Image 1 (cartoon, one colour):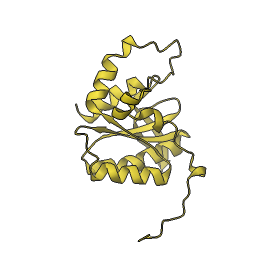
Image 2 (tube, rainbow, N blue to C red):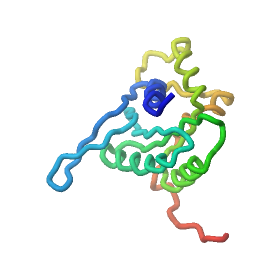
Image 3 (spheres, rainbow, N blue to C red):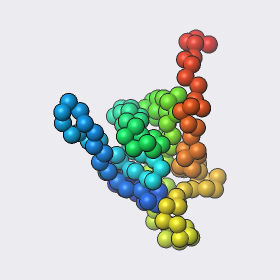
Image 4 (tube, rainbow, N blue to C red):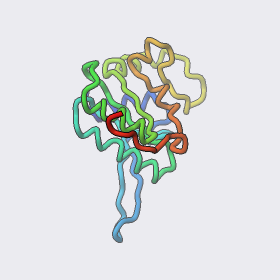
Amino acid sequence: MNELASTFLLCTLLSGGETETRHYFPNIGEERYVRIDCETPTHVIEVGLDNTSSNRDSVHQALFAAILTDKTPMVIVIDTDGVEDRYQYELRKVTERAGVAYAVCSRDFVRRWVATSPYRDLGNDKFLYDLPEDATAKQHCNLGSAFEVPSLEQISVSPETPGK
């Protein structure tokens, strides 16, 4: 499952989510745009596969999209091997410091969750998130806790003293 397929499946978990949305902005006399992997009524989300250095760009992309949309930035990593590799570790630490919501979802779990979604009662609210809630599911996809990220105003920006 590649990044595009993963993004599509994750966006289906987030009812009301739309993939590959564009937001335009002026720059040097031209109209430019950014493409957002997944956009919900409240979040702009960048999705990446584990074990790739390109995931570092996800934080930047999510933050810039948040500036353009006034929505909450989020980064989701699709984990293929169950190991927090160096790039996932870096992302987790940077998103914590920057106040960006961060989640890791097992690729296989996302496939199963989407396949079984017709059997869950989501009610009539089309913007209701179909997020894993029970503890076992959260071990494989911690999306619910990522939606509870503190605001930037609540994050301490004082740098840690090296070596302590």
